[in-house]
Length: 262
Image (cartoon, rainbow, N blue to C red):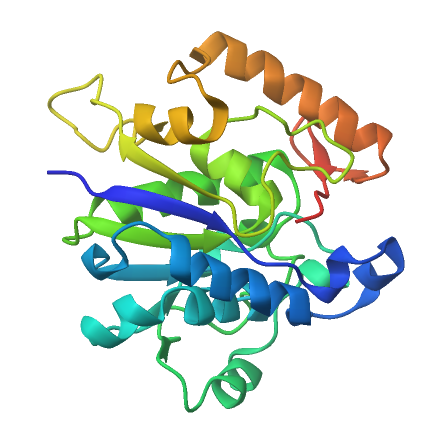
């Protein structure tokens, strides 16, 4: 049975306070961000049922996971697994992670598992981590396949506003000024869609928001279909370009490097 994935956008970081703060490298949470985590810890349904917590290796996402899900971490005796595929989409300083050595120092006394974070994971010049649509889509699919293969049944995943659109393939609200339809510490729950190829269950690895999750946040359990999502994505990429989050064209014809703030 495929797991349920509870996706969470990180709490407010200092880079969320102003565009000038986008120059901050791997920023921490603000005091309000820490308070948002404490509120999520009190209001997240059935935290004791969570049997895995996964996060982008950015400091703000790791601290969001630690502060928001202490019950799961303590009662299950688990660690936050840092998964580099979940890092944000742009190469701005605020969206560029710290070295594994710095992360090891920062989280030395905390339940964080950094074994999946390699040297160079924070080099946005590397093809895998490049800030363009093709590369981000590829690592979003890699992340979904990794999640699909997990043995746990209830997984919390903490990531970023821009990347969560790629991961979930849900583009509603992505044309907002902040570049994402996700609010800080907003959470949504997903299951995996039935595969179109029964001989290869991992052939698609698409996430589908649960009706109860959509009902809770939108008052409507009906999700846009794939064509509607494709239209929303095209509109989002155009809007991100208009906001100045588009960089040098990538090697792929017709694609541009998208820099989404989250």
